[in-house]
Length: 259
Image 1 (cartoon, rainbow, N blue to C red):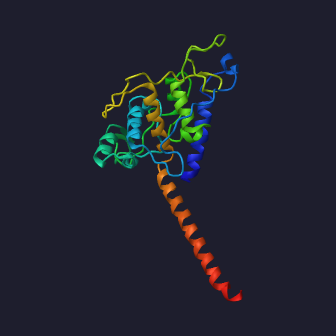
Image 2: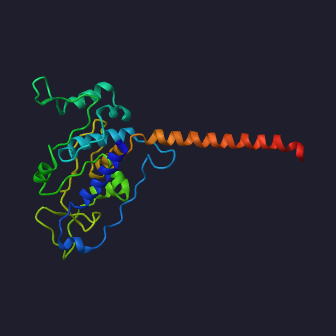
């Protein structure tokens, strides 16, 4: 059932992002620009997450993205997988108010988050989210990297790609121009500006660095078990190679007397 839920959310994210731009002349301007290509540490069969970058990306998400976007499929206990201690994860969880209940009187109540809780949505429902964002529904970001063609390259390009619209392109009052978004007109304002966050490790918080870090974080949220899957794949391949060698030796042994 969890897998079905993820598929539904992925489809919803795709539809939500596609619908973020209203019908304007800018949408007829042509196809989106091809995403920039970056080298990602988790790419390839032996790639692993850059945990320092993922942790910085979590900061960017919390301080910038979380005002509009949730992480429905990430529990606070999952943060232990990116190198946070249990105490650090508990502190982060406690910063969120979680609706729980009913209590003995049948009423719902608010309590601080705990490790078993999942990141709550910043809005009580979709209508409230649209009302706060000019009619556009901010998608949940749990699976956004998997939901968009181009994956992490697309997300990174979108975050760094805002620019002035070309001549002849008209935008709505609440729209912005981003050539990496289909049609160019996007309702999300540029989310990143230099030095918006202060990295504790001294890394310079340029727009490009923050976009890179939060994209690494969102790649992790889309597939927290990526490293485990790759490790299992390597073990399976090694097993199959050794098994093939063994079977070949057995075959030689069995058929040796017939030659």
